[in-house]
Amino acid sequence: MYAVCGCLGDARKVFDESCALDSVSWNSMLAGYVSADNVDEAKWLYERMPERNVIASNSMIVLLGRSGHLEEAAKVFDEMPERDLVSWSALVSCYEQNERYDEALRKFKEMVVDGVLVDEVVLITVLSACTHLVVAMTGQLIHALAIKAGIELYINLQNALIHMYSICGELVAAEKLFSSGCTLDLISWNSMISGYLRCGEVEKARSLFDSMPQRDTVSWSVLISGYAQRDRFADALALFQDMQLEGIQPDETVLVSVISACTHLSALDQGAWIHAYIRKKQMKVNVILGTTLIDMYMKFGSVPNAMEVFRAMEEKGVSTWNALILGLAMNGFVKESLATFSEMKECNIVPNEITFLAVLGACRHMGLVEEGRRHFDAMSRKHGIEPTIKHYGCMVDLLGRAGKLTEAEELIANMPVPPDVSTWGALLGACKKHGDNVMGERVGRKLVDLQPEHDGFHVLLSNIYASKGSWDNVHEIRGMMRQHGVIKTPGCSMIEVKGTIHEFLAGDKTHPQSEDIEKMLDDMAKKLKMEGYAPDTREVLLDIDEEDKETTLFRHSEKIAIAFGLLTIDAPTPIRIMKNLRICNDCHMAAKLISRAYDREIVVRDRHRFHHFKQGSCSCLDYW
Image (cartoon, rainbow, N blue to C red; front, side, top):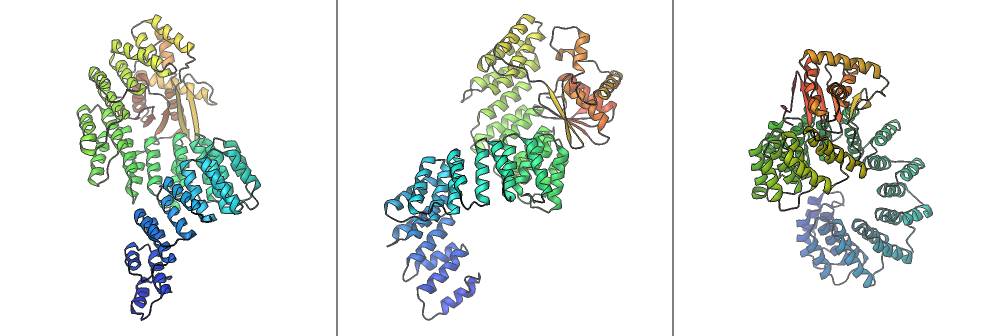
């Protein structure tokens, strides 16, 4: 009684004071320690038992396996004079719980060969191992054993089989089990929906979800997460809104998926609403949820909100620190980013590969060549982390941006791993930036040969030729693009106004408020001229006259989005714009002057980093 009620001290006192102890006394005391996960006391008691029966040994196997002491659990099993089904099941479960799936299957095979009859519990355990190893053929053999034992209709076993077949991509088998199931429960439905999503059958998953007789939080979570993983972020948000209307409280998994969707859709207002919802419901912000919130705010340029989330988190993982270091660097707070890295090490958080990618990224955003070299060297020397191709790519980009083109090319030549197209691409971008057309042409030709379907490399090489006035070469590159079916990705800028995302392409006149936008663009042009703005027509590398080039420049997508923001977003709320490509020199200069002329803060997130424009200056200090 004392042991079952968790009063182990009182149970032990009665046990120690008893004049006569039988096997029930010993097993009861041992069961108490096993329930409390008290390994040391359980081992002490087990070793002193006058007679170790099967029940006691099985309890010890369960406890030792649950505590990660696999070798000791196997030793107890091997020393048992006789074993029953529970003994074998306990050991198989030990291996499965500790993610040693191959050994779980091997031990199960020994069990079957030994003639031990199987039951539902052990089959569910080995099916879990099959699922993790994605071995459908072994799972089919387990299914056959269940049929032979006459237990294949047990609902928990059917659910395990549906899940196994779904994960292994055997949808026909999973559907057959699901359709023939007489007593399906919520787990059956959720497993089938999850299987459809894993295999890319999103519409089938949604159809099954809509036909469910009842749903739980897991049902909603599975589909919302599936939408997010398949880049159907608008559908994820719409389903989350339906979930709210149904009065279902989301769990952390749902919220992580929805916040991720908000980030991809540039929907800051909705993301901030979800954060407010978390605070209102006083939900615990764990490492994954907190890190996702930090990542979202950083990707919207809302650094204070990200810092607030970070400081409020009770538990922080290495991923949390990484998100903060990278986010600060992307937003131009390089000094703070590197200081956070130092603080991370002071808190005894061990940095990983991603940490150093963030740190090297911070250095390249401000051209801190020497500091970047120091951190790159410390990776292997101090932390035992061998640089990957991505780390080398960061260093090439850092050196290239700083104008050290020869050193960057030498680093590529001496890399212990073959350079990828991203690394060569970083060098090509640096050649364009610093006007080294000779190296740029050589690197560009190499990249076009390596990846003929990549539009960016063709465009960069074409721009290098155009800057030299080599129009024949420009036409050659464009001919190659047509030959390979390469289409230049159009510049697209997105802005959120009152919860609605508006997208603009270069020269866009399809928006319902296009007339008002055109008037604002004209007003912007007048004010920019008063600020001393002169269009940088080098950005329009076409063989057309200067006047046409100026007109083309002033219809870039980010300028249109800024005009729309000035029309629809009241001060002092910042105008936040997300662009799919890098911002050009002309738009960067124009945004600085617009921020001063209209006394507005403008935040532009381009393909590589954030630009916070305020009173005529940018957070990047023009180093980008």
